[in-house]
Length: 233
Length: 392
Image (cartoon, rainbow over the protein chains, first blue to last red):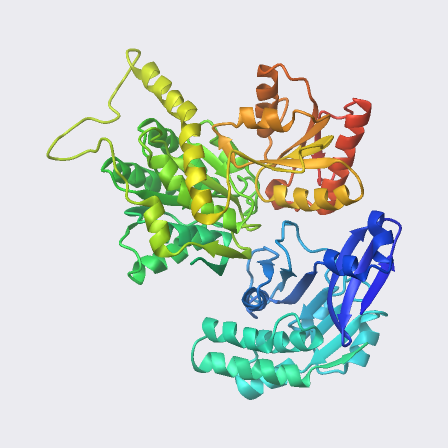
């Protein structure tokens, strides 16, 4: 399904499949006519997916690792990627931000991400000090590590059109890893919210990054989080 | 068969060096170059390379050790950034005038004070006249590709000059991207081994770098200039061979939509990518804008830039460094000098941006393009030198 949003200077086409948000394409207004014509083949030919994801967490929680694991998995799926941290002094416990870009064509842009399509909140406490929805595109997605339901979080964040997914990553991590490490659980929840990469790809890169038991447990975490994550439109 | 690996910019540099049969690496870790040294020392530790890794106590010592090793005929690599490059400064001149074909990764970071670990080009621009061949890259793939080509360029008997491959600190050094790498055998075949012309050897003693006063110093420097002036032939030859091997075509400059551009941006490093992305979307709105990205900064690509601006009406020169007290930033001064020498009067203005890592946003770039289009239309330059992205 294509959702077309027109503004004064551009139209943004958001691509959705079975209710899952897959990506956005921004066209300048000049080719508007082609987009809304019946020549659907032309439209599809023009479409290139660029998805921008922002990760929130705290130093030491593997936020950068998660942003990179996702990129590695997307590489396996044949995509173009960028994954980079918002570079500050690395302080354990302080709020940190990571970014991932995934695209069907080479990514030329090298600026920070100001209008993410998806925000992933790895640490639930960070939401009290950081505006995690800042700049989020109007119908974007928030995927949060939270005990509360997506309805409740959506109310609390005060976002109208964005989709919200929550998963209790802490419980899953303590169950399986016996340690409060939430980054891989959030990868599972993210893939549930938006099928950016396949479970196979993400499992493969996690096993490469953490060979042996640690990898296996993290793959189990990802799968459990994928199953348990709940979302609301 | 080549494969795609997920590598940071620094990781791409380390991986390239791993494949280049390097005999000696002497380096001191400094943010944001650190990943290069960390990852390469792992290759050494794991026995994946035969390289002698010299841990030194400073960058001054790192470059000194590199010079000594290079004079014995070894293939040598080092990497640094910011204060580290500044501390090397005097040795940089010695490396180039002694004609040591060292390859160095410079992970661009600003200079203190105040202390800042983020990207700008103040470090390399501060040592811009050190007589090294200088290359700037846009992304991790280019970092990998240029490091491999750098060994061939540096060590060619017609050149024998050190080469600095510059990549933007953090923006590239710590950003993971897909990098298409060569097989080890392919890379090894491409770079082969160094074939030194003249080496220091205990059995056949020679004196290197001894005193030359008013009698011969000037002639030595003149030969250094000649070597730099002759290097383009070798650079092109290596670019051609690399294109044949990989399909990836490099040159002195990269251009984007310059054929019929009315206004353009010229800039170094990762910003050129952002500028191209913005140009692409502005083109779709019918705005005739283009981008010039010098890959090779020294020797300065005068001829190529003049050709690229042939049909241009206005140019914005972006400098990620400032030459305090000078009429323009370093890149802009070079561009103007090149155009003046050829008698070309082109309306241009200089933009200083991104100092200390301040992000350059696509919206900033779009505003610069629009200003350049305005200059193209009216011929009026409101501000010859402006600062973008700073609070005033």
